[in-house]
Amino acid sequence: MKDIILVLYIITLISLAVTNRMRNYVKLLLFQGLLLFALSLIQLNEFTIANLIWIAVETLLFKSIAVPSFLYYLINRNRITREAEPFLPHFASLAITMIIIVGTYLLAGAVNNAPVDNIFIVAAFSSIFFGLYFICSRRKLLSHLIGYLVIENGVFILTLAVGNKMPFLVNLAVLLDIFASVLLLGFFAGKIGDVLNDTDIESLTSLKD
Amino acid sequence: MSFFTLDSLSILMLIVLAIVLVPVVIHSFIYFRDYKTKRGSKIIFFSALLMLTVALALGYMSNHITMTWVFTEITTLAAGLLIYHHREELALEAVWKYVFVCAISVTFIFIGILFWGLALLQIDLHELTYDNLMSYAPYMDPFWLKMGYVFIFAGFTVKMGLFPMFTAGIDAKDNAPGPASAMLSSVLVNLGFVGIYRCYAVMVASSEAQWARIMMLVAAVLTIFIATTYIVKVHNVKRLLAYSCIEHSAIVIIGLCFGRVGTIAALLHIIMHSFIKSGLFLHYGQLAKVYKSKMIEDMGDYLNINPFGALVLLLGLFSITAIPPSGLFMSELQLFGAMLAEGSWLMMAIVALLLTVLIWAICKIVISIVFLPRPRSYQQHRFKSFAVENITQLVLFLFAIYIGYFNPSYVSSLIGDAASLLF
Image (cartoon, rainbow over all chains, first blue to last red):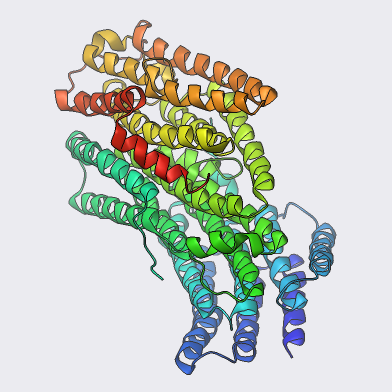
């Protein structure tokens, strides 16, 4: 079951790579949140009930409901419909994503002494590197935010892998999620969207030497 | 297990924080006197300053790697509020970049912590305190240890201002108000240093010290190279100071790689650098008031316009470029001595060459501000200047000289004790 969820997760990454519409990004993020919710319920079987509820609230309410609906709100308010002219064509994007996934798979295979399942490492690292690639290759600031959220999801998968032994780290990962997302999203909603109407990185190039 | 500890390193950094904070608060009041500010903005500014101070103090004292991480994250929030004090588009761009890069770097640190957690799990341990990590480092899996350190180091570089994540910090220091930049370039850098220092101590305790050392040396030399190339072409006083800040951070990191002597020099260097750099950023407030610009082209004849201020600026120039009587001269001398003692001639030659170019560039700029005739754009106007605005910087510079040359025993014993964490 774990494997199926993680493979589905990796498929969402591939589909993020070839999507251009903002709404679809958000739908995929929502789906990732649901996958993480299911994964945490299966994986964290040694947790106390209270702690498990807290994790469930974070993955279900925060990751799959609050953040996506907030992103929808931002998209509607700023009228951002799609990623205008991505830096790379779809085929190249797909190829790079495949390279990332295969690369992390080979990397995880090379590490044969890991105390966790290899599939967790593959999913987590694909997500982290894909998020970095996504940030580099998109123009809209909102896409950068989505790239960051994908990285966060990757980190969350990695914490789930060690979760049973170190519950402290899982709770910290949840805090990281909430803190950083609220900081970035709140900031975006409050300021960037108002001041810079067309939220393109081209409008953020005035600081230089 | 306790989450916090008061060891020599944290005491040293807390003392630096306490000393730097006093002139920063004084200059914040001066800043608000000169530039009319709404009450709400003032409240936000001082609350953010307070939050930054508390987060820094707790971050220095953390004994648990996750606590260092948590407080590093809180400093991002506080620093963001300080940078965005002006509510204008440039500040918005700076703060967005800063917060975004910091969010990614904090995630990197967390990934590194997870890897170290994995390595500890393999030997059936759960507590990520520094003591625990250091005593069990020799038994931890080298692969996870190294991977973790790469991510932790890369994450902390954004706070300390090193290659690869220094860029956000430069824009932030450029756009924050002077007193806030003084905090960002001195005590916040120290937090990044404390994080790297404590994690490097874990690597030294393991058998992978040599590997970590090479990585840090590469990052540091690249940083000095970048700082030099940018300073030669810089047009903005604040960016000049910000680039000089990353150069000194790199020197400190090089110090950590050269044994006990180098480590002591590095600790001495970062303490004195905090005083000098905060003093220079505070002095920038007066330059901005006199010339109403932060561009070097708009400045000149400072010696006649503000004689006492010009003398203080010259002392600051000597201090930051490590020309005697600067305290930094002593620490850099010690550092180069340590490099020669280990036979790293090539390394020393590269660093010395880059530093020479850098010192030339800084001297050229500051001397042109002080001595060259005033530019056409300058318009005579009266400005309110109180002696205290210069005296605070003077005290900071003199303090650095005092520590460098007289080497008071309480400071040197604290530094020696802090260095024994590594060697």
